[in-house]
Length: 219
Length: 74
Image (cartoon, rainbow over all chains, first blue to last red):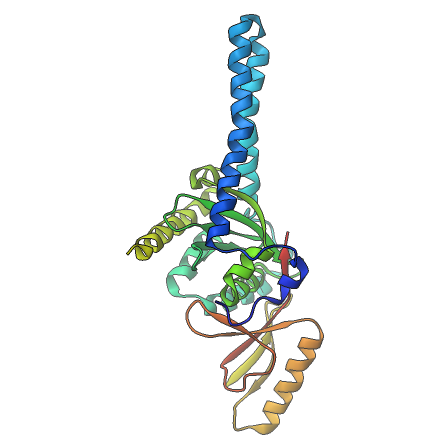
């Protein structure tokens, strides 16, 4: 339990506090929603073709919908850590990254240099924190939750933006997951292929960390 | 030497530096700390690997106190 909940929780007082069970439930809801989107379009596409083969173009359009809709959701998830060109001067970026480096260990610093994401082990899973969002790989590594969250000051350099999120996460992990908006929850492979190539090793590192968390949680 | 820093558009700015036995420097740091709180910043100190804590009074014994802005869902 955190010593003190994040003060930002007051701005989202109607939200129930996130915890592992609630995250599992949210994940199931996302999976159910995906199935609910995909199955009717596939069924419609197949049935249409069987009933009237000349309706093949319509069948194909229906199948395309079944493919595109989950892809769009996964894209939305990957977008939370999509690299953006910063507005801050280069020296400010360097100073902010220096401060961020002081907050993490050598391996995490090296991963950030390669991918732009900070790996942080938490109770809810392995977090990958970027300047405007975070990915949470749940213990076991079979599900990733994408959060859109940030600090509302566009002039801040990227290292500082990450440090803001990292400090809040470390102070109150469940509060952090409550304040942040869920953009996607699903299988890591769905997000991975939508990530920038340079960021994919971070997701792999997050999954490896999450698998170790799962092992540690076992009796 | 303890430091009070604020994350800002320059990367970060050192607002105060002090040692616990330098009363004048501590008072200056406390004044700077309160000024940042009044501006809407939150103060954070690291409390071990992977842990941080929000503080409302300047922890004189802390090595590094970082002022951050509120976060919100995007």
